Image (cartoon, rainbow, N blue to C red; front, side, top):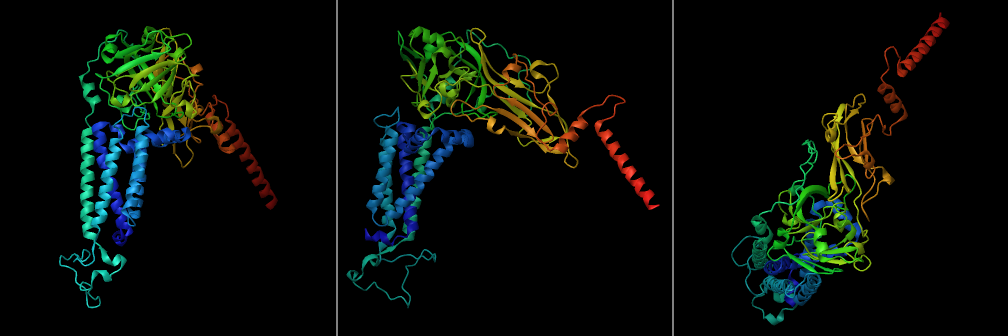
Length: 610
């Protein structure tokens, strides 16, 4: 339409953005009714996660932590806003161009939605309805932005309500025939009508978003969690040893609270699974396929165990590790019921959102407490941690063991099937590497001169101790000397003249430290302050120093001096030696020699001058 050519570029971009907001709002409502993960923004974000290379994902986890999904969805929304603005500008030439742009993005959204592993026949409906609503909104807004040039218009900039009349220098054209005007002169831009339409479009988009939020907020999982009464375990976990949790300010607790437990997964929208509808199917290389309901799981003998989980993306000294008391059914018992075949070596587990995970069979069957867990720290699993049922396997990184919302297990072989992360370059089998972490002093914390408390932790490390084994996070923490796990570790902190305080810095040793890709991070974790504090724990190297519930040795400055200048190192070495009674310090001996030399030179000079 030639009429749209009189619309300024900013007005076209505004119309495009509002039309895109209407499209997403309507799509959100439809997706909330059908399936929350069929919302096109979520589907596109999921596709971005699936198509991103492993190093990029690892960087996103390190940089944004558990907010990586929020950042991703926000980034997709920003891109969609920019594209909608471009579509609006193009629509000034022809509304059909804008409609074609919306249709193109609807196709992209449909591909993202329908290619999901759990996609249904109606999942694409939200994208189609949203695109139609956006096209209608764009056409309506651009139509409101123009009026015939002969009609009276309101001077919006002046704020007057009376019709604008031509001035003496502006000859009136109302009396001329319309056919004598050419091109854009037939139409005029009407700012007020556009703004009224924009306000209406934003109201529709906001109401749709609010309705979608209310509908999607009907969280089946949260309601069902409150109704579950946890049965008592047939094999309860032993009480924690005395002194396992030292309750120090700044030191992470031995048992991580559910609200603080780390979360790393690929789910943009957390699956809502009703335990009444949940089933677990075990098939593949088995003699007898098994299908269990949630009630079947509760009726089986239950095991309670303290197990540490950690993510393969966790850097040495990183936060993606947590210890919890889990309750569930031993995976080995269920697999024995199915009858594993001799050639099976992998369990390919699938979650409710289509994520797959490959777990070595021999690890699950070697006697450790690998569980189908449904409770965590005395309450039903939180929805974001896998409610109603998840896998928990000691000694393996989460990407090869800790499937949340698990619904299917195929007993197979590593040379036959591949899990989600394996084609992306990560190792097939992910045994955890022992790591240690220094929590106190914290990164950047001011360290006073004198004696300071050093506290940290080690884990996780699995050691088979018969049935069930042990998988615990060891502790390095402050306490009284000789108190086992609570032994006090104090480091002498030196101070230079005029600089009585310093800051603690946590870092590795350059090329001796390796990142998580492809089978977990390795290398030392050091809290170091030049000339003040030097503490080091080596990931994987503390195993020889540990016995159960006993703290590893910390290297203080006296054991391993930091890299400092020669003069400073000599001075610190001299002052650190405590001479016995009657013994002269080396520094005092040198100072005496220099004093005698200066005295001799002064006397010689006085003799020559006399």
